[in-house]
Image 1 (tube, rainbow, N blue to C red):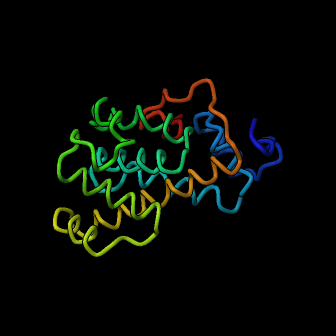
Image 2: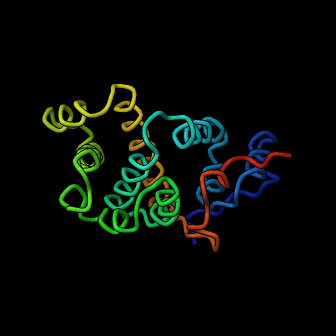
Length: 184
């Protein structure tokens, strides 16, 4: 049970309520709808990370899973494993996330992304050596997108953990497409 109750739909602003009704019944989204002034921009930003970035989706999802592991966010982990697989991560790569950059499963680029994610998540700052190693492989746009994705999911992990959001019965069954608003 979450630490605070999920809001009643009737208590939400019309725009927020309409958007909640369009989305899959994810407990994280239900809880975030309490923050009505922030809810729609939060969704738009999260959606842009998942659908509009130039950064390879597989690299993004490996970074998100690493954030989930480092923060202990089981909800985030459970929801993103199938998305990572959909984006091209292998079962072996998912299983190797706890070992991070030390795992021989990952290639050079993935190891650098995971090391970058570790430093960003744990220290906020990224060392010059780690930054330069990844900057040699990714263009500036993708570096910025990686920081945005990692930071966004670090924020989401903190919300999940602070409020102890529980997994819904459908957890871990969503694809990128199923997370998009319903089309009439």
